[in-house]
Length: 216
Image (cartoon, rainbow, N blue to C red; front, side, top):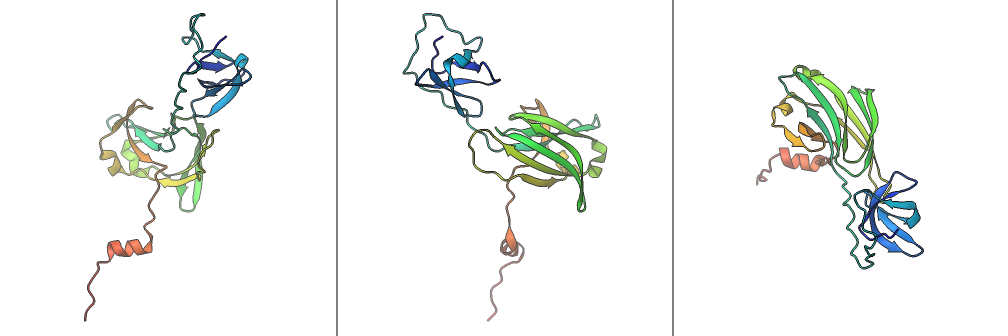
């Protein structure tokens, strides 16, 4: 079977799909998957995905421009709260907008001790529910401690694990909710991978202590 650049193909021996982005020697093609990583594979180890079939007399275009790989999304890990006050039940989710696979542990933090509540993997561009609570008792919800490792099979910049505590405050749930396409419902959210600014002692002094002219 002849292939052309841009074809959507599936690996015969592995659960991988992608587009052909290069034609190489010895009947090898480069297939770029959803992570943006190009994988060299023999032509006899791939097959066209149904709906991408061409006529038998369709010629291979060796000069077609390669597809631009999907952009790798590095940021967008959210703590999301869904539900309505009138219904009483709140659902807490972790949303992964990134291209990383996440390994997540959520604990209840009390003083210097923690108690595990949830652990799981979250695929790229997916979400998972980890907690339910009552809107009437938001002030009694635990302080959540999130420990998150970001994993990718493609070459990316080194990232440190996320180690963060987050408490849901009742006042935060008075803000308008925003529709999120992954959950397909309106949510309140906190950015778990947001880099917190380190003010430092000098910046705190500059912020809180007014500058007064020296007395002569």
